[in-house]
Length: 280
Image (cartoon, rainbow, N blue to C red; front, top):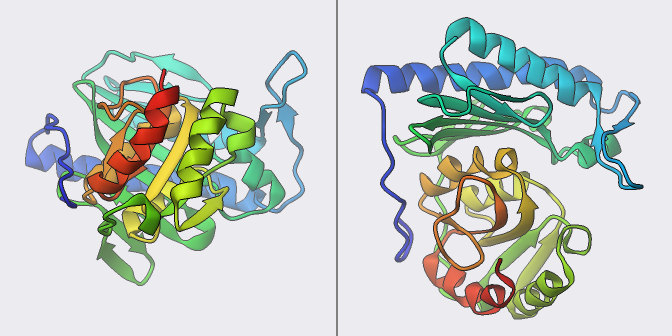
């Protein structure tokens, strides 16, 4: 683990079943890509699933990818549960529960930016076990598993490992869109973190978490995340040696919310000096 970070102890199924599930989660990611890739940069329509003047885009890619993944899950593991962004919950208290965001970063998808991803996670006995951040346009699959996180590309695989970063002043920090997703108090906390960082990049949705596991970003700060926005990411970060917490620095709950991820606990502790002031 990286400089003082330690992943929570989480339950693990028998090795043979775990290996089967690792293979299966990659098949689910491939099935989602079969739906989304033909629609990317195709000029397809966008629906708004929000009310009260808000805008929350959804497309045929979101709906079609989740439907395809759910179909495979229920055919292969009919006793498993599913929590998905587009089609809700089915047996959410089962021993194994899949958590799905079929297209994380729908705005990026619609804009033609290749920073969206398939998020597919698996809980075992209520705890994150496996996770995939899949970017099919770039041919990248970031897989998190108890055996270690790895980046899978057509030419082969490589281990994922976070990098050391002793303090915030040396860090590359990322967030998706603080102006859109942070409250007033949260914006103030973010501005303090931003002012202390060496490099700051905005945009990227779940892909910035993948880059943290890759070791090119040191800290990611987000808020108002849903469970499907973060649950699949946790195994990728933790099994690459990083840490995921809430804005108090505590273990992340099962429902998302305020999230901070770091490759190095020392950098996280620096950021928490500011973030704790606006923690829920």
